[in-house]
Length: 367
Image 1 (cartoon, rainbow, N blue to C red):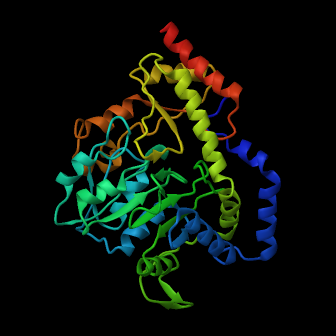
Image 2 (image 1 turned 90 degrees about the vertical axis):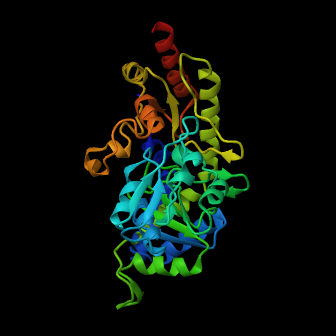
Image 3 (image 1 turned 90 degrees about the horizontal axis):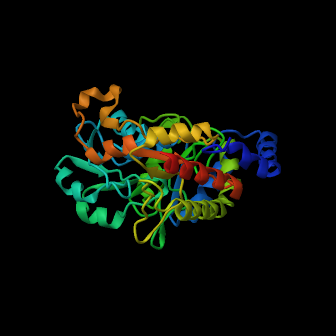
């Protein structure tokens, strides 16, 4: 079986380092926050080129605490897209704000900036552009659209190491939020996340919010939550951060193989890369009107695929109260019907890539 993502392969390749990291934390007896977390925060901030990073227990909490730290509250509006993972939306609603959706660009799958200006109102407090699948939203152009009053929070959960021109994602907006869910380019062994920013005032508030609102032990100055990054996850992430650029480079090579082998095959549309962007291919997502039949064929040939995301947020049963039916965001809805995520992870072999592309060519040649 050629898996869409094989996390065991990564563990086996770095087993000695990972097992050593586990032993080091267990021997220290320090499991929550502490030195490992502080060191990883500093190293990740330096990697991105920002002043501060705050480790948290998930990417979802990173989004939520970013909104809280910026003062977003009930009655405020936050602009984002409906073609993303559900945490982008649930973080907005959890703080009591209203999500205002804009459609996506059908070529890049990213927020279509042409629609953003019309979505901005006097109640707009923030915009959350999603660097989807490892691609990059033009944050400079977005700022020009929304103006200085509206905060820009990068959802960089799928863009570890991606660049916009000479800057890494996570260093361009007012804040940025990363998930370290295990399948990410930089993944923990469980849930973990981080907020990055160069805003000293905001980062102090985030540190308080993640630890019950504490300023000092048993001195609570705001209403906070428990969203602390575990020391064990920080140890894994420090180790893996050293390899991230190499893993991203491997992903780029795999993507180029897909592009060469699948160019002009059937009605496949391959992922576009905006000029000035460096795509890190958290996912390699193709588009075809025969998506479901292709997926079934690949499954029969031992090729595992995924659909990200089969139902846009505005059509999810849980969010019927939005009152947004079919046709509200036609580009997002079309992509939900037609996109398919192919196997993509650094340890893919030449033989496995050939197995994927040969199976796809077979489907279109016989169909």
